[in-house]
Amino acid sequence: MDSKIKQISGRGIPLVGDDIDTDRIIPARFLKAITFDGLGEGAFIDDRTALKGEHPFDQPQYQGANVLIVNRNFGCGSSREHAPQAIAKWGIQALIGESFAEIFLGNCVAIGIPCVTAEAAIVKQLQELVAANPQAAVTINLETLQVQIGDFTAPVLINEGSRNMFVSGSWDACGQLVANAENIRETAAKLPYIGWGKLAS
Image 1 (cartoon, one colour):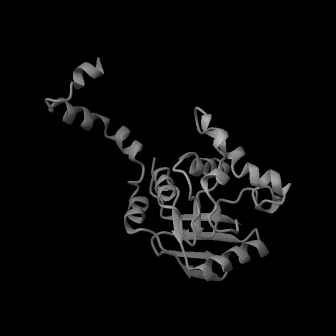
Image 2 (cartoon, helix red, strand yellow):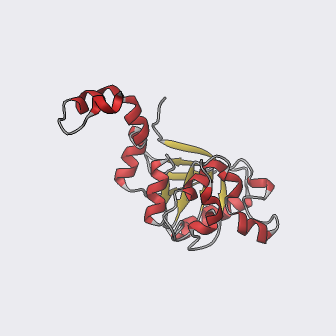
């Protein structure tokens, strides 16, 4: 399976507001879930309930969208990995924002969701373009570091280390461990302080 992520294409969904924290993304009561399955239904559930169908995640024109366009300090608050998992289970494959909380950003990278940043004016324009035409194609290119919506193209940024991991496919640490299981066993067997044979049996 190729885990390289060089480009994400689809449709956008604008979520306007600064400092949207992880408790708003997925409330704490959902953290008792044993797996992440089904978390997508709980994404932004309290905000969605309060807005009675007017939240972007409930509006029909954004169903099936896969690029979330947010503002400043998105994902702040607790370090719960359930937040990016809930967004991913809803169907989001990439985020564009002014800035992201550091731990949220790291959790996104770990599950293969690029988070790119752009200047506030560009983010606002992207949100407005998607709101005006929800069916418009949105493309994020991690090689050229550009986002395109229709005829509009703008520069985006991503940490170079994260960018290299996505483009090379090395973001998936678990996948790498599974793929290299035999090499890991051989190396571990040579280490005197790891009782690999005992663990294996």
